[in-house]
Image (cartoon, rainbow, N blue to C red):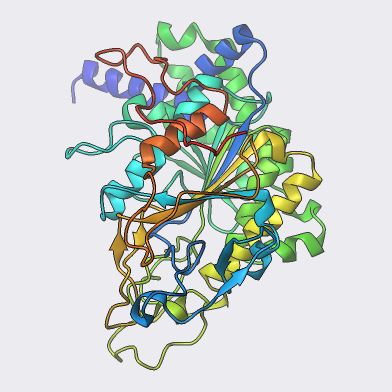
Length: 462
């Protein structure tokens, strides 16, 4: 390596170090803090996005088909809710008494049955090109446009990431990524760019400064572009060790009874942590909400709703291996509740909790996956990928309460009313967050490009 190459590598490391976590809140963090100084008041709207990674079944959640043939309707019956005429799956009794707080969109329709393409489409509202995701996820874009809600808090968090199968920052670049809290929320690991901090090290300012210094040798590199922002770079480090953020991550402050209602496991506690982060001033929190276990549970904390086999066992619990599973298939045991009861517990509690704290009107809650599941139950008692129909649930943040938008046909195979696509959900989310979805905000693109080409979903917002 030549001297000039070595200097360039050092400068790159230094610049990366200053962007660690920094830009994770929307802009390069020094730039963000500088912009915040000049921008004044920001929108108070925030969002918790429950990404049901892997694709939940609409039949076994919010769009049951009790009159369809047995191979379509499945094993479970619908249950009446507190909204007259609206039924959901019987395995969600807690949500059945809270349907007057939410809106269900039953005429959702996607374009891809691929986990990666479907996820990128749903979380950005833009269908990705064959070369990969170009447009950023909602959280990255909203934190860029709106900035943080509170000094001392990152704008955008991913629990544990900003949506599986996606490249969240898209054209915005790495400096605009989320601030990820990985692992168990009780003992979290905070990932900031390429740097991962254990809880004890994250709480130790000197340890963090040493790691930043070692990464980029910040004090030894001459770079006028960076040095000119020294004031904001110093504030950036302060932000990463903010007392506000430290406090938000301390779940022990919550009553045990409330924590138990969310679910005393990684998944329920992530949803509680999401509420605490929003309460502390975060703008957008994406929670990958799927329990780990079953046939596809080879990780430790990143679960899936991808139930191609033994769906009715797996959705309820991974504790016991179904007897019909071939002996050579690996089963990953998990003692806690499965996806469906855990989702029922955490979503219903989140709605109550936000309302109790006076936060529901200013917090948009969105729960959806990348596609629905096939109408016909397959030979292994599961359902496969199906982008032609699905459903989504939204609440708070200006969303009408107790309404059902659209419908699917009698077998749930396709929308029987106007279909609403990921582009339309994007436009609606941006609108609810106080951002014009059809305006051009980012001049760096080759031509003026609105952040969403979709339409506001009719009848969804107040």
